[in-house]
Length: 598
Image (cartoon, rainbow, N blue to C red; front, side):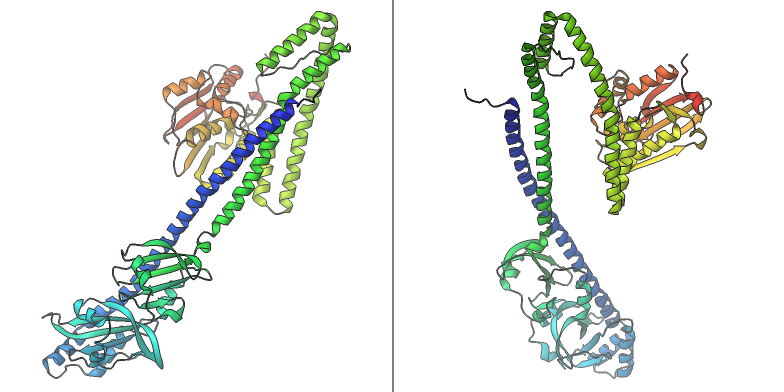
């Protein structure tokens, strides 16, 4: 006879296959979707940061543009160039003009050269600076790529890369513009301003780059004005690269450069005509993906382990009653008659149990009754022992976890475990069903502490309690169900920046009034009526593993049974926009609030 496979093995094998397939599919889909999101956000962050850098550079150039406008439109410079253009004696001597230029640039913290050529192309005036141009006359620079732009711009500033002189030839930033007579608007000279490359170093240095990454800035003529690798300054940009960004729109393009994948971020300045390029290694741009991959894999393994554990436990609980029934039927043949006194949610098993018990009753009713009593008594003892053991074991375990975390100086995690331990102890621990309002508030604060760990600053709770009523006795777990309902059904379904819960506790004559309000979605009148009829969405709170197990309708019923129909729970629209839950008790301090046996 072939050995048969047990139901337990069949269930574990089937469920394990389904769970393993599902978890692997979820991991793959989650990784692909999260990878795409991270890549898009990383690129967007890089592009936004790059556009901000381009804005900073524009500000720097515009400040020097404003300085040049102040200088060329000053009466001193205008009169000197007008006199030179008319061939008349200059009304201001050269030393006076140099002093004026030095005065205009005195507040600049770095060395800047101002050079002014008259209409004849002679270097007429310059400020005191260690920098200098490599040209002595305007005629010497007419063959440069950028010179035609001076006349074409008709007085607007043109910025480009050039060579300057400081003991030897060095790269500089050169701004040029035509000087116009402010009355006749005719050309009377040319203005040059020289800015050292180090000015851009300070601005670009705030843009954090990886080891193998760099930023390049090119002028409208394709010359590299600035590069984080200074060896590139003065070279020409790759024409193929410029062609890819011919649209002048800021965007990011993936390219293969030097046998490595690179993201090239681009931004264009309409003011200066400069193009900014950031060359970012693709691995650096998506470095968070590897972290996400490992986390998803770890979470997937944990989920898989939890799912397999659940499968084993569920399969065992499902097959155990059948195995137990088979064993008991086998024992009947040996003279052992033990009926089933347990209930089950499974209809088929319930029919089998009922049939088995009926069979035992028909065989020997007296023995069955006696056995039933013995089993009931033993079961009651086991249940009582479990009720004592499980909380004690749970509290010891949580305290062990707490001290373990505290020893590792994980303050927040240890506080969370301690709050959970106190929360469960308060909810489960036997004793009086009546506590002081102060004790119930402490339980509520533990619950709020755990919720704020989940929702962080999104959840805001205001508690305003009259100190005179803190010693009053109320039913245990009165406040927590109200706050749970506000979070689960008032706030979690609302997309809002801040969730607000306002709790007010005060006395009104001989009545203690507790109100809980939120700025959530609220309830219609029909939904409020359903709550007091035992239905409504608030019944779903029972599925919450941290839930007190007391719905709003049950809370209302408990209050009326203990204190009378004059007291209880009422619901209304809150001035915050959501729901207001109001609870009233008779106001009696200390133990006098407890209901009497009479």
